[in-house]
Image 1 (cartoon, rainbow, N blue to C red):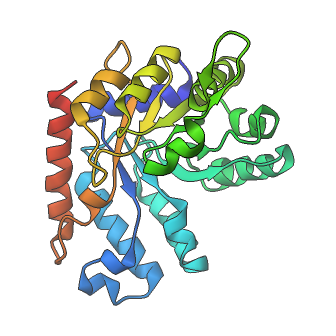
Image 2: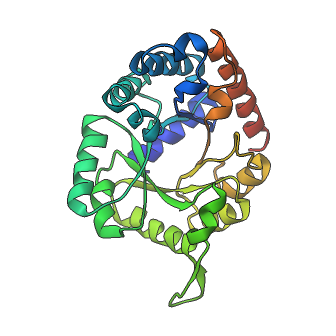
Length: 277
């Protein structure tokens, strides 16, 4: 088993939880005592309390880069320090959806993995394998390839039917098949992003990629069917699926006790996930 996948599975077994919490700090949704502070201190304190309240309930954390870039240098500083707050035995997946020419991907790999210390990132397959190769070269890291995303507009491209030497297939199926070979041929753990909002697509991806980890957004405010998604997406060991929730947990409360409310919703989410495992 590759090191990132081993770390992920160990975190699931230790916590008894599949849940990944997205650290997506929207200052406008913060409690008043934090939203009035400068972005750096507001984000860092918000994340510190969320992590402190939930770290025993998660398999991973997933900061989304956009929420930090929105505040320029102070936001990026808060991201770097948020990364440092998370215990070493919990995987941290940066949701950045990158994909570029090889030289640029090498720079991303050096920065995001070596300098920032993220365990895994999300990537776009649109530029093909040669552009992604530097991101898949480190045996200790993971990459999650955008395959079938949870948003309603995902069908615009991802469900397009394309010609294949063997059979007609949809674009997301081609991505899944290519990710399988990338996982076999590269040192990093190569997984996929598939939304809980499309359980039949998820079932197809799991049949094509029986052993790869799947990062699964859509179980919180997007109201994905948890039971259907778990039945479709878990691997044969009852693992390999990383359901993510962000807003429903982060903004469950709006007072000084917001982290306690976040923990309560996180615990309820864990219980719901475990009821269907």
